[in-house]
Image 1: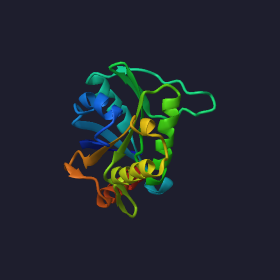
Image 2: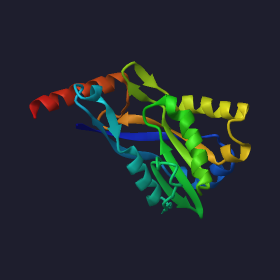
Image 3: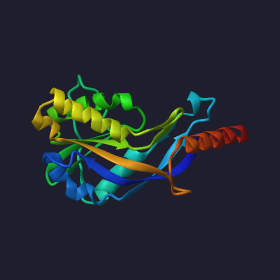
Amino acid sequence: MTKFQAYAANFELYPNEGEAFHHLLPLLSKVNRVDFTFLVNDPSVNQGQMNSNFDDQLEKELLKNGAESWKLTLPTEIPQEFDFTFMYSRKKVAVEIEKTNREKILRDILKCHLYQYSGADFAIIGLPRNYPHTHGVWDLFGFGKERFSECKTYGFGTHDKLGRILLWGYDQYDAVTDKLLTKQTRNLWRTKAAEGARSR
């Protein structure tokens, strides 16, 4: 794997109402930039799959700004799939970061209900506006807002439960160029990953 430095900025919450929004806004509004690392496979391995440590770095940023460590224990029949949890002003929060797959967002909203059932007061789904993939760039945050709105319109979850879920959007940048990640960025990183693999 080859490492590339990136950062997240321009954070935005949705919906900008409800219990979760009002309680967590003082904490989440302090997050302006999160530096993290992308790991890119040689394209001959898993088609140059990209992964990152954004969730770990975001957790550190929240703890630095006033959140406290807290661990959510799920029932044995529910696999522990959340990315991290924390406590803020005595409220417990579970965080799910959807980095790559827009088709999983509806499942992420369901998982937020499972976390609430298991003791979390609130749940957050982190979604980039620009996930670069083979066919272009996906706006996962925009897609998530559509799914969330549909949940409210068609009754996929109660008003109370949905009011305790927040979507947290952000832009991803190449830390070297300060430019938004694009399909071209992905192609360049995959080329460099292949060159690095050949030189080893």
